[in-house]
Image (cartoon, rainbow, N blue to C red; front, side, top):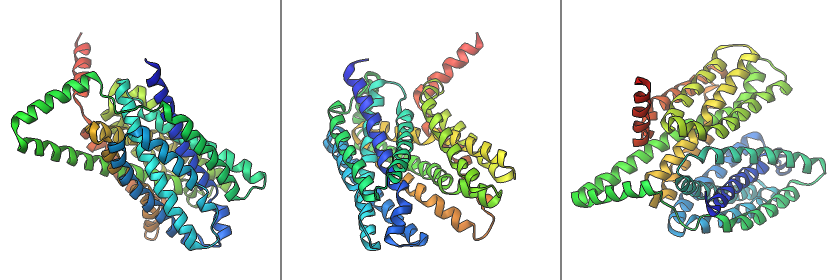
Length: 412
């Protein structure tokens, strides 16, 4: 493996960790910022919608810019902007200024998210084997790092603005230092290049109508991937906000115990993402999505049905493990569908997925007006089951070849 490619992979890890750390730094400072501005939980919930709106807009803008200018320019630029914008939510003392700060920070974070994922697709293509899930695991590690740093700065008596400014400054330096290691252009693997050439030749021979049909087919596939991302990330968002409350309010566990519900979910999700790339190389992305979603459905079903704390921990652990490899496969498939439009395609899938992430907690909260919290998780079971059934959208020629080869070996 050549050194530039290895360096590009390391740089991608750095940017994913940076993105997770920046977002995690905002999250751990939410209670202090909420108190400083003097707003209620309900008002904060409304302001968080602006964070999501900004992220969604940023994703659409950055996707097209990445395709036009290249990830080597857009990724470090958005890394610097997102790091600089981190301090903004720590400064306001009025709700309206906090609203503007969250809109800007969300926009910058969405730009960084999509551009680094587009670059990750290019790195994966150059490697010729799955590496996407490990990048997403690094994002989770960044969140853990932010929690540790946030606890340290709070203990030291630093204000949210001071702690966020310090982390933002470190982020700017990190984004600039790592920029040179990024790939200068989107690489195309030899086998993919040959396949693309043959497909292009056959399309030209068939005429403009066939070319238009191919584009429509690719666009339709991207939107199916986006809907699946919405469903999977809705489940993830619901676990983020409701796992601890489930143990506390439904099972009557003390707050100290309930907090470990989310910790269990996050830990198994991180572990699963660290292992997923090897499993994808062995079984294919379709199998990871199908059996991962099925495992998640079993896990949340255990949470829904059994009224015991140990069962809840086991269920949340399975839920995180099952979901862990799903989103990276959807992002990867979107990016590989058309290398020349990887940024735009990833932005569509990531954007709709982010909507699901934000909607998950709200949808579950709305359903609690009609039924018990654990019963609302039936919706998550259904979404995971639908995802498992629809996983065939990821089937590729390599999956068919792998299946044929396994059947041939099994016959001997």
